[in-house]
Length: 412
Image 1 (cartoon, rainbow, N blue to C red):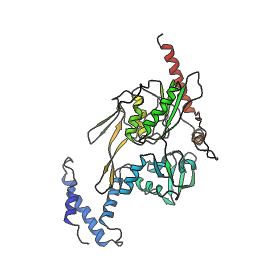
Image 2 (cartoon, rainbow, N blue to C red):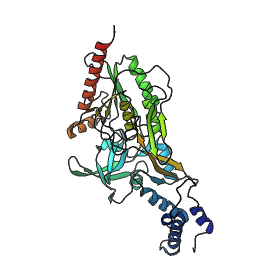
Image 3 (cartoon, rainbow, N blue to C red):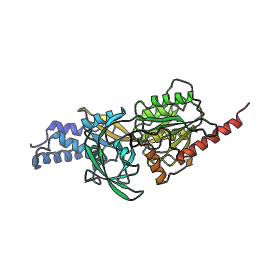
Image 4 (cartoon, rainbow, N blue to C red):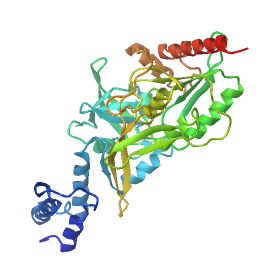
């Protein structure tokens, strides 16, 4: 097994990009690559199990460790993982439907997707995953945890969950399923409130068809005489950035900056595009909470800063970093944090979140009832009416006041 081939050493050494800062003597890429190459040589020469020491295995494992050490959102994806990630953005994939992230070093449920095994079992946002199939998660990377949650459709997975709100630890046995996620739900005119026809639409995540689905839902509500709209982004974990920008574009003029990034690479602005149809100028309220993350924070932050919407609820999750996915020659890919998102008002989203105009917090019992109302009944049917929780009621009251004020100030 001997030494590494000279061509591999050369390839490793010259992965340093021309635009990288000049290396100091204390941090020379050539010296460090020699150390890495020597470690790989020793592993191939002396490691006891020769089934684990192929150049491919060692390189992939090194990449996983290197990326996961940077931050919870950077990761290496082998060809199979990369393919799965691409499939996830098309609204259909296999798994448990549990969106997880790391919060204070603990794997935390950001959102159980509706109509998924996790949602049906009663898992809630904020639940902490202590074990997966009996294995503790405290030493797993985010990528490793996600890989254990995914797998073949029909297989059972046991999650040991800690619920901080009640300090209850419980095992949930879930069966992986093919999950189809319609991203726009419950579009309807709410029960009459003071004569105003207030519409309601909920977005569960941002994927490829979301903006088109939302546009069709709004067109339908407008034909029913909608006077104002509540856009519900609670428990929305994000998704595709372009989709979030297009959703913002439903309520903003063309070429409006929705967000911008700052990092070591040049800053980039994200702007709305032209869309068909007349502008949607009616009053708008956006519901957000602690589980509104990423793309939903971009939408909420833009509509707030541009004075297009009134935000109601709780401060959002605070996941505002940019992950660039870069494909590698063998079909694998690197997801690398390259910048942070800012709202049009130059407010940093990452680790800060977006604060609402009107703060309204649900109790544990109210939140549990809200999520229970969204689950199918025992016979499989589902109540199509919207559960009027306190946050929604505050949003409706605010819109009523806006409509009343506009009516009194409108010139004859």
